[in-house]
Image (cartoon, rainbow, N blue to C red; front, side):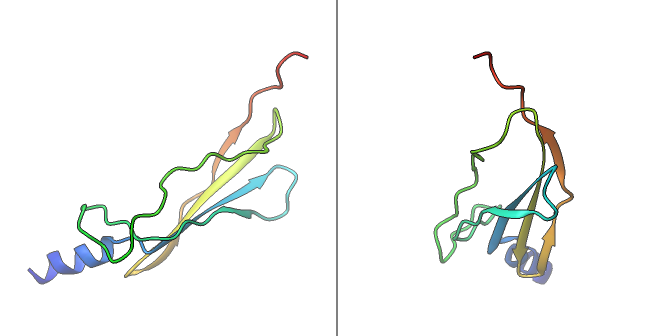
Length: 93
């Protein structure tokens, strides 16, 4: 029972943010930082859940970008590895 309670408390995401870095940038920039609490077990939380999706706008065509998610729960804060992707070429004019 104590283990289940600890897992439930630790599972509530109390903070997360999305970082973006382009191929010509020296450091990432914060692009999304919602507020709220998210419990992956579906239990009620004190705050409403934050947005869980975000569309990054203003990206340049055929440019490589890296995205990283930083999340925090009762056990601490952690960051994902950077995921790399490239935007499509610009359409014909």
